[in-house]
Length: 264
Ligand SMILES: [Zn+2]
Ligand SMILES: [Zn+2]
Image (cartoon, rainbow, N blue to C red; front, side, top):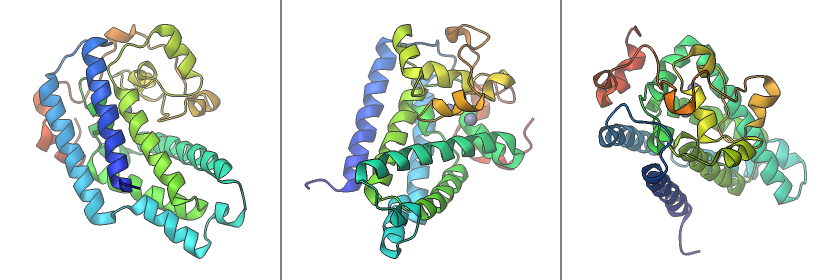
């Protein structure tokens, strides 16, 4: 192989990021309320910080945990002798479900919401919003994922595929692109679309507390947290949280400090 794992991952990330950015230019779904260059700068700044921190603290933690579990025979999948294709599907579906659960929990427990609100404070949604998570939330998610991987015992390859899908889907589902309505509806039977996730970013509390899925839409449908249409038509949905309505309240340094302050 000419490219190593991190190069492949970065190539997928960059490809999806640029594709969404171009599509947002040509088929925009939702009007903008904040400056896009400014938001891109902030969100990519946070992303850079997340990448540096995650690398420094944990390295390739998730894939490493899978290799570690494999060597020691830890985890359910290392007990069963399943075909690798089946293992791959189980890994993706299981991790996606647990990330759905994690997402519900960070909304329900006020201490975690302090960090997750940074993601929700974006006044517009676009491809960069899919990367905007407070570094503490990123580290917490990573720890949780490592625990799950040690218990499940997937192959490092399956974890890699899952991470690439999650990363690509996060950028797709946050993108400000207008899909044909028939396509949106068809995709939503299986996966999360931009219109579906935009409802989760509405200031309306019952809409925020719905559509928690990241990759598969089935968890919301099965567990009763699915909303097909917001109260307002898609282009009129007010994005963000009521606590922060001004761009200057959600600048780079403020975003990092929000969890440690009293939220109005
Ligand atoms: Zn959320
Ligand atoms: Zn989101």
